[in-house]
Image 1: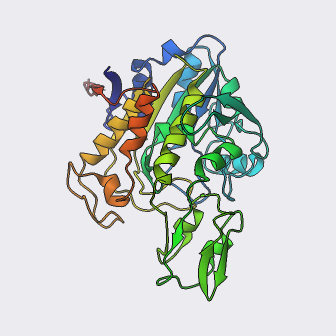
Image 2: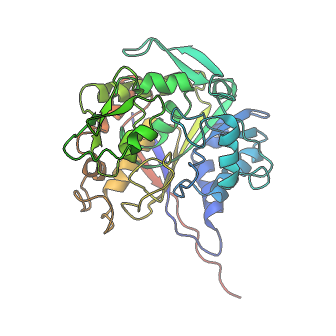
Length: 378
């Protein structure tokens, strides 16, 4: 079955600015059909780690909120706490970070921030899914308790999944801390001893204390490792790498099973939006962001979470890579930018598995919004 995916480019005119165009996109994609009056509507976003600037601009999130309110629903902004130790690992610092990054009560049109899994990441709901890897999943309770869900994801590269978009924003982003641990726990990095300089950066930034120095080289205690990949992004010499084996497909499958759990009670009550802008090579969870790998593309909206990620990946791969980024291969239009970033990650596996779970279709029809013409001068 072919899914409709609505697309807007980033061209604006005197008749319609970009936030107004975004509102039109969201309406075209069918937000009216998922909302009823007084629906408590979770707007699931990534607030960005402190120091990161690639996350979605607050002015666009404000317009999404205002569009939801047009239909008399009651939106709230939400995300779940992180597994790693950072500025979003508990509800207090998470909320502070969101406000510092521009998502304040006033700037969001008097919309509250409610952290989905509570103060310390333990406010969770157990959802039975009975699938290959997970019999049940653990989701932030406020996501489950909400009447409707609007996912607004920043589409970019990701070290473990190849890319992060709607499916990751839901499957990983809505999981409680226990749920995130469940998804990561089979992935243990490896250390290339020849290039390790014993700087202790990985050790200092390992949440469970699984890394230690032996003979001036870093070592990982696999029994303690939670697979958060923090050591990978902290290593200044690139000596810490994911152990690319069958656990990576399992990680991707678990993430899709968690997505299934999130959407289980949201049939016909969810809309998905992907911002293909500031397309960083790595996750917004980092306290910094590297140069975008391609030019800004636009924004997509759909009621199909699989189709929107497939379309987003296709649109990125159609671009010519920007010079001077960490992307060194697959630079031409039509070449796989995510394989260029992470050669051993089969990012398509998550889409195939999501399709088998009934989450959506990889076949889509891209419907482009026409840009409104300029006003005629009098």
